[in-house]
Image 1 (cartoon, helix red, strand yellow):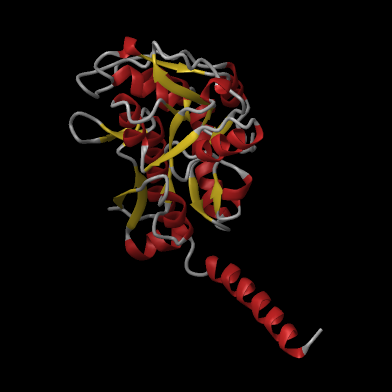
Image 2 (tube, one colour):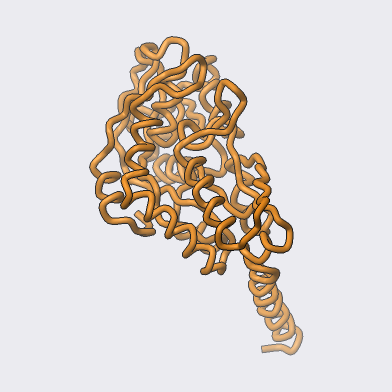
Length: 299
């Protein structure tokens, strides 16, 4: 190998090593809270019913309640009497970078735990299990994935749904015209206004969007669930102490029955959005199994 090539290779290796080390520098999450007296958490505008703004412009949701319990435990463990909870709105595109660079201490919404993301951030014990489905008008000819052939399909950029759709489009040669949107509401509106023929998103988020629409009977969630996905809370990479704290909170919520009560609150009773609507989605067997046996496995 020529000297110049060797030098370039060594420089590249050093750059990668420095980046990896740099990603884990700085105080731990709990030390940061002790120093600043604040705990920064990710919020979403419309990740129903996990993390969203209700009719009173207040943050709410199944995952938002997890954040509240974690904040209580952080306050207890750090001894910060007047802990300041700092909300920071994130999107599918910004949520991982903001956690990875230590701007956001904890993000719990509708974020799928997978191998690629695990290289950038830590994930908690899984708190929910979902699968992707297709959102269409109820009278659409689209009933399953193969029916997307040649159709315009919108999906939120930076999501696992986007990756799944692109892989399926290529492997099955669907020739679907994939359109990217910035967030869940935008994805929904593109189908609602006829700018796309279908949308792909997580089933429970989709059920929430249909339930809160003015005419739910005009919309449908169709298609087989091809691959279940695990939702977890994100936190900075390498902070095992904080992961243990968050895991402990979620596990306690499951074993105590609190998580089951929250499921009933957000999925089986009206929530305070657009005057109140009920997603009415009975608990699935995978979620029952998760609550009985908490874990942080990638599905």
